[in-house]
Image (tube, rainbow, N blue to C red; front, side, top):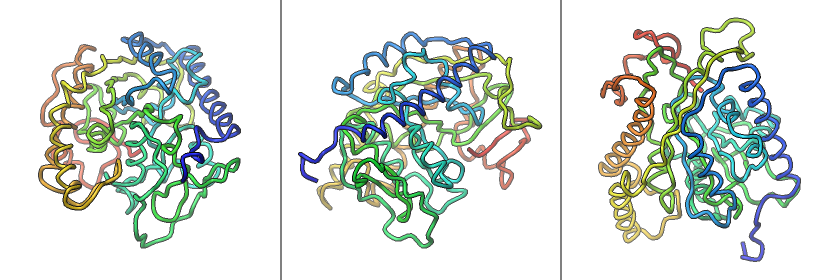
Length: 374
């Protein structure tokens, strides 16, 4: 694409529909929290100051990652109902999330709604052969956090052994060419192709599934968050968040009507301080950049978010992701400790610890906690 054809933003109608969707959902969540719940927040002033600093896209210098524990199917979007009203109708300064493909993108209606709602279609490995750490949606998230725009896609699966139903989601008010595929068959808008989305805000639940326990114990964190931190350019801001009480709004043991959130519950959202990225992750990013530079010398330049086999699976790459993910989890644990919870058992940070779930990944576990795929 020639520079003069490079779009600043999606079409006007698309932006209006997105603002309406984000705002309407935000209003519903805010109404539920303020009118039918007891809400307390901690540290939100600092977070709102950070959002204010990011209000104008042209002035942003880096992306923003928020990361939290995951305790109910409604954590997102209800969580963002705590934001002041003035923030709810500005999609360019609101979060992008990762939503389960097999739940949120099963037909064109749902795909349209969640695309307007700034949710990226994400395959889960337990449900799809296209899931995992290196799927194209993770590339989109990395590029949203980076400067961009990124106009060319080279990360769709080269060969798809089965054809899935395609939502064929494009911007009907433009020429629709700025798209990407999650599996080689479907079509979704590529948000990282627009200047207005550079250095965006991405929220992630690294546990990858709901985990409800009385002691607010967290599962191990999956490595996707490490890719966002190691590969985005420049280093994004990272804000850890710890949430409580949303599990009472949508507890996994709830009976009929299951789809209705339970009112009159107490919820709490605690924002940690923005992490000093260079202090917390600088050494890991330096090692990653050196690895990447060495691989590019061998095989040529790699686009942002695109990896060769060595950068995916080598021992050093795995070690970097493991350590990066451990540090992210520790940052959320630090916020958890502020809320008066005891120190976490180090074994909880290990995937091997949770293998005891075996085939019964969902439902009540031996320790009394409840897990659910989301």
